[in-house]
Amino acid sequence: MNIQKYPLIFDARVAKTIGQLTSNNKDLSSILDFSPRQDANSYNTYVNKIHEIATQLETDAEKIEYFLFNSKIK
Image (tube, rainbow, N blue to C red):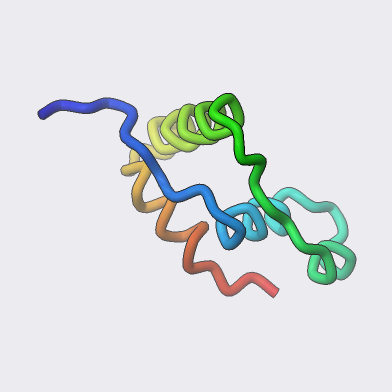
């Protein structure tokens, strides 16, 4: 089976890491709760973007997913 864009975890832990990585103010982002939108369009955008970034970085999307899910960013 050769699936090019396979499903990825998109939960509150992943959303929080994305929020912290993209925030200009780490002190403020650390006190916020982030949660993903629960609609198919948002999930599809997330999966496509992570796969696009993985291609640019010449890595696997699941490695980015793993980092986002297990991040200890403060």
